[in-house]
Length: 464
Image 1 (cartoon, rainbow, N blue to C red):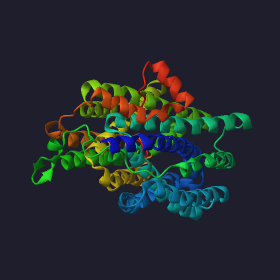
Image 2 (image 1 turned 90 degrees about the vertical axis):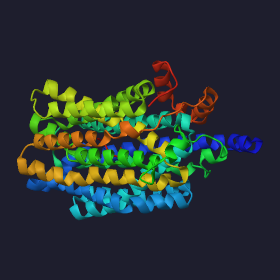
Image 3 (image 1 turned 135 degrees about the vertical axis):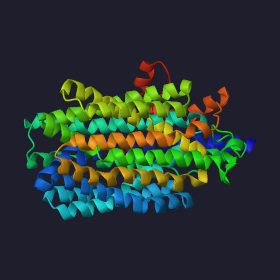
Image 4 (image 1 turned 180 degrees about the vertical axis):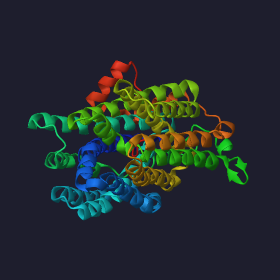
């Protein structure tokens, strides 16, 4: 016991540093992607694609999804067999190469080069995103895992909002606000200036999962191991629950990909939004999600994690159904923001549940299933682009997505009959766990948000 305590004390600083490095790298990588591959990039593709612009937008996004699917399991298996920190550092080189090729394709207006760049960048981006989530889960004790993953989601959302904010500043400084190809190209290429911040990944330390330094008697899950190992049809309960949750996520993301990618274009075409207005909308959208992530996390403490996830899914689906049929912009905008906030607020809780269900030495491979769900989002974008061009109305894809959301909710209902009881960690364990993630508050901005919230707890890869 003394040896385990000494190991935990020795490693604690390294875990804090790793979480801090991942959070900083995440902020810059997501901000860069939001500038370079965000809504104005889609508008750029719409311009160079001509009458098949929607299909080109969908095809580029689907290329990302297909490659993520192809590499998802190999990456997950590799992260379980080697040091995850070394994998992140090695992946960074190829991620940078893919980004360079993408920027070259944008600068030259070459569609083939855009696809080549995406072919290199997409699997590397997926490797970084999926492996970093596992490293975060490995670096936090079970009592703090939901909190840490929620904070990671909040930071990602702040970064996503930073991208449109930077684009809006560029448009204001240039005095231009139109959909011209040259302006869109200049704004998307400017994201390259954020690349140095991603290099914080190289400062991470190679340490084993935290729960392995705590000793085998440490509780690494909020669920009872007896409950998780109970078999139904010779399959342990843990895999039934995890499988149904992942199936629900897969169906949801398949429907989301047909719609979410085209929302900025929907406001451009149907409501004549200018580039600046699209940027402002892109700035507000992630912040609404961030607020809802915190609300969902807090409600989950009182209602239970499963009930909170199901409730937010149901309400988000209702919002989308209403959005399909109303026309006034004064109603469309609030529903758009509320729908996105509700559906995406579930993400960190779903990930925390999965990490509690799956043993540490299998998290990399199981997390690859999430990558396959991400493929559903990207892959269905091609179908969404085809349907939008075929019907001549983005709302047609909204109806299809709302129907798929409804089907995903029905798929999740069996969970209410088999979901195991959750156990709260003792107060001492929770205190230790929260100390292990103290670096999250090293950011002054996040620390100020914590103080204003009156507490220490704060809250995709693909969006729902």
